[in-house]
Length: 93
Image (cartoon, rainbow, N blue to C red; front, side, top):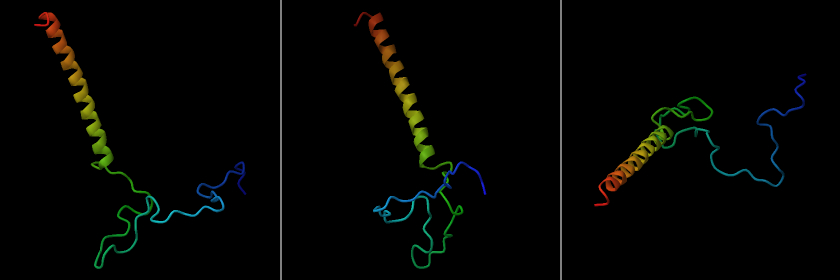
């Protein structure tokens, strides 16, 4: 018998009585079987378990968009400072 301080095994938490499971598909669980008649796609394209994000997916694209947005924002700030400097140097002409 393991002496691990009586810690429960991960995933063995009891549900509070009176709580019902939410309906629908469990998160990260690929649906099994055919989605339509004649569907011959594999049920587990990447094996059972959680879906692993792959490069080129929404998360990666979003982070790249965020980087580009920050660069544009910084460039805009620099341009505004530069124009203000020009205006001050020329005496607000």
